[in-house]
Image 1 (cartoon, helix red, strand yellow):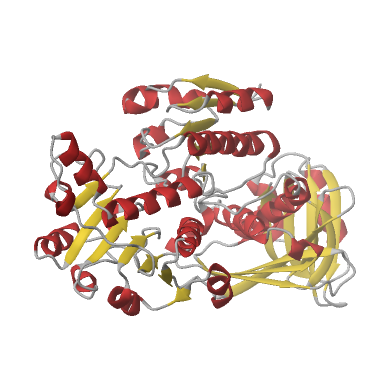
Image 2 (cartoon, rainbow, N blue to C red):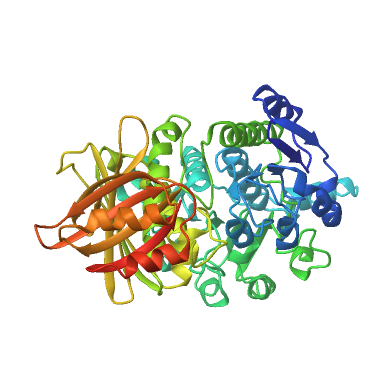
Length: 528
């Protein structure tokens, strides 16, 4: 049965064609996204949901999404998606961060020109039959200082265009490297310096705890008198009440706004101010951008549903279509290692250390770690999944360490998981053989070679003669058939382990009988 995708917003017909060409069944209902109840009623029938900004994917909608695997947002912002609820549900959330970058940057430049030359007010005046040439005295932008708060995808394009207009561009962005700034022709500065020097300020940064209200009342008071501010990014970046006060005092000359905290905003005194230009979130509204993001999200969702490739996901590591088949056997191995360790512990996990050795270290280890953590926590938290696992671990204060290194053993790739819980550290190592199947090759530094079957018994005991025969007799007398039998020990007469695959579930009474055997330290029934 092919995967099914619901398109709940207006999306280019080219997106529908891509889904169909890739073998994905698509249901185009562009109005259903505006009705949350209708959306909730039908979402359970779909593997994917393609949206723009009109559809609100709430926790209640996601509760009904019993088979949903991916949400694709044709655009950058995912503010209309309950990301925490989607992650907890194991739903990949993708966006298209590059499809409308040029369009959004051009809109910021257009708003800057509109501010500099009073274009909207001049148009309204002329249409009213007036000819107020002296009323709309503007400023040149050549030679003026443009301060960019954020210089990523969109900000860097704005910088490029502004440099071409002979502006001097300064940027505050902690992630902007000196080399990248030099390439762009941008001067990297601290925020206080930008506020004091910029004739125009344009915002291009996501909303985070560090950037929310970055233009606060305090910071706005530090701006250069007569500054013009452009916000085509996020409303939450500016304290609008403080901005309105500074407009009324003429400290801020004018403002251009394309975004609002609530859309549509209704009555808003800031938007009504004579020196404010406002547009209804037009940053991405060009034919080219809408076509680009529609095509891109259809490609991304199809790649995931048909080939397990993940790109531009906001809640999971990226995996290309070429990487997916290489990762698949190691994801299976990671799942087995995590599940093995998770079934042995019975107290809260404090720390997880994962070592990737050899060729596996060159793969997308974040995906492997997520798979391992999900399997590790699943015996204690049934609802955890590979998407939510890293967040769940963080919430519970579990420290996760990842180490990569060159091969130092006989195997091309080795993955080792060490878990600290209950005052004890348990380690298990595995690899993938040429047949693509996972193998356990070490448990607590004791070498072993064990295939992983659906039902297994794990035993630690003293290395003494006669154990194997007695153990096999206990299982045989109980009617438990042995499929494979793997043994290991640290030294003669020391500690030994047995990892035995059996047919079917192991009755508790059989485990109790094994536990009573001389020299046995630990017995666990494992299910994979």
